[in-house]
Length: 478
Ligand SMILES: Cc1cc2nc3c(=O)[nH]c(=O)nc-3n(C[C@H](O)[C@H](O)[C@H](O)COP(=O)(O)OP(=O)(O)OC[C@H]3O[C@@H](n4cnc5c(N)ncnc54)[C@H](O)[C@@H]3O)c2cc1C
Image (cartoon, rainbow, N blue to C red; front, top):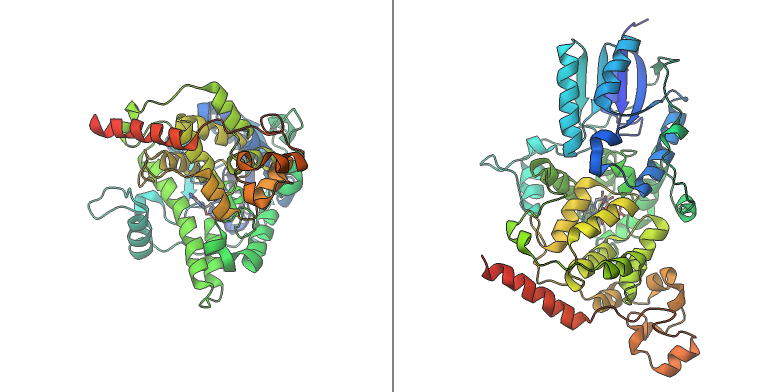
């Protein structure tokens, strides 16, 4: 019997398979103490939003089951809880997989130093990224700011290959009877029952993640390249929350997709899906090198942008009451299901920052609280991209027109009809612009605009010109 006791600190790696920290900690039949710490104190303003907390609760429940109810829960500052736990258990090692949010990096460094000073073994591993930021730099040793060279040159051509998959040890020996909290004491579930729909839509946990990946490989991926833009279809993987919480490693997704037999009609879709995983890597890379990414414009000139202060239009946007059906359907999909399709995230985001001219940080915060897949790197990099102030951002003058976007990507209006039932009877011709429907048609389908569904809260042409002129002002001031 091996007398070593290792603490396995689960964080954003809530799985047993392909989990380097777990596999290494349990090597040679060492005893393990699996723990989870809800550390809102160190997270400060970036502690998890409500939707993420729901997912986390379910995911921990599932992980605890897989660990035969041996996961120990704690609440508080990890830098105090871990030393305390070592004192109590006489554990000799602490194992974790690395996380990349700035607050976690700073905290983990502090913990590592303190433990090493006390002769405790600390081992950290790469469990969550295919290409870790310190390994991916340009030839001049600076980080990449543009996606394509980052992915193609930095990762695929010159980066170390993604590590091989690991198998969960066949036998785990647990340390028992350590005083800890019950999962319910973490109080992750919402007090008000808004999560009924979410409960029916998602299956958090490692099994749920594998199931979703398998389904996607069977049905979605072959049409991914083109189909991924259609919110009315199911050609996307919906793996984002599973990846964020580490119920599935990007390595598992990467290798499973690479194993698919590439025929001439699936090749592009496979490559495209892998490159989307690449965007996840890119966002993490940006956050790693620009730790203020969630708060500060990467392009300094945007610090002078004359954002409007209009709580009423922000609320219309949040509630899906802007009068533009594709925008409202997206915002209601988010509220109802904790998810929004990527194409619609771009349309709703552009509408907020360009047509309403509200600061991107309002959108970022709302998504942080309402998305099940809320991810500091992906969310802040994407909002900066949409606002035009980020690295490799969409040019500010490219403003999505919600009518054209709706007609192109939801051509039959199925997506709008699903999330805006009051418009469900409107003929397809008017589904993305109901205010253009003749009176008699509106009467026939029983809808009174401005009463049953709002009229547009801004004029697209005027608001577009207003945004462009504000942007032009920035360039002139340069
Ligand atoms: C304004 C805005 C905010 C966003 N906020 C988040 C967020 O908080 N969390 C999040 O995971 N994604 C975010 N995204 C990126 C993207 O919309 C989601 O990752 C995607 O919609 C998730 O659906 P999926 O899993 O079906 O994606 P798929 O299309 O199946 O892609 C597979 C995986 O690749 C990654 N991925 C795909 N697109 C992107 C992207 N543009 N950037 C980074 N990674 C990507 C995700 O991990 C995703 O699960 C945001 C995008 C925008 C425009």
